[in-house]
Length: 357
Image (cartoon, rainbow, N blue to C red; front, side, top):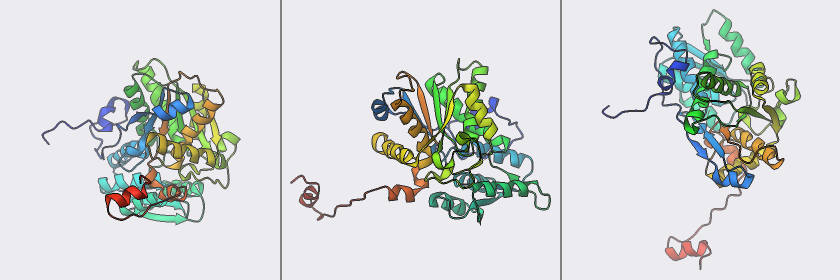
C-alpha cells in the first residue's frame, strides 16, 4: 500500500489499552465514527450544541465492534480457537465478524424470536453457529457464562462481562473528546446490558486523569420503559420494548452503570416506546441519520429533559447512537406510511405525479 492509512483503533489508543506487541491485529476498520452536529434537531429542542456520535458507521453497524476487536485479539493471544456470546443481535453480528476475520469458531446463543432480522442475518452470513433458546437474553447469558466456564469444550466468552470488551468500548469517549477538543457537559446513551455507559465513563475518567481534558461529563443513561431494571431497582423478568437491543431485564454491568451514574452526578431514566420511536423518526427526517430504535433512546431522553427545562441551553450535549437503522428493517417498515406514486416514463408523467402540473 503506497498511501498512508489511518491508524486502526487499537493502534490509535494503544497507550490506554491492555495490548502488547504479542497481541494479534484483527482490525476491520472500527472506530473513527462521525460526531455530527444536530443543527436542526438542536434548534427544535433549544440545544444549539447538540451532537450525535453515530456508532452505526462501525464495520458491523454498531458500537460493539470497538470492544470486540480487543476481546477477540486478546482471546487469540491466549490461544483461543472458539468464542461464544449471548446476544440481542448486535453482539452476535460483531462477534461473528471478528471471529471470521481471526479464523476461529463463533457460537451465538440468542432468545428465539426476539432478534431483529438484520442482526440475525449478519451472524449467519459471517458463519456463526447460532442457537436459539426458548427464553430471554438473560437466560441466554446465563447459559453462555456456564458454557465458558466448563473444561470439556474450551470457549472464550466475549459478552461485555469480558473485561476486554469494555476496554475497547471506552475508546468512544476518547473520540468524543478528541473531536470536540473537550469533554461534553452531558453524555446521553442507551442502556441495555449497561456495559457501554460504564465503558464511556471509564474512558472520560482516563482522559481527564491523563490531562487530555479538564473535566468529565454527567452520564445520562436511558432504558426503555418496558425494560428498565436500573430505574425500578429490580430485575424485570419479562422485558418488552420495540428497542430490541436494550430489551434486557437484568444487566450484567448493573453495578458499574449505577457507579457511573452516581460518580458523574448523572441519571438513568426510562423512556417509552412512543418517545423512542418519535426520536427515531426525528433523527431520520431532521438530521438524515438512520439509527436502530434502541439508539434513539438517548435522544428521546434528552428531548424530554429539554422540554422539562432540565438542560442548560448552552450545554454541550452528545447523544450516542449505538447502531445502524438497517439492523432492524422491520420496525422501519412498520412505522412508514409508504406511498410510491406510479407515473408514465416521461417528464410530463413524473411532473404530473408530483403535482407540478
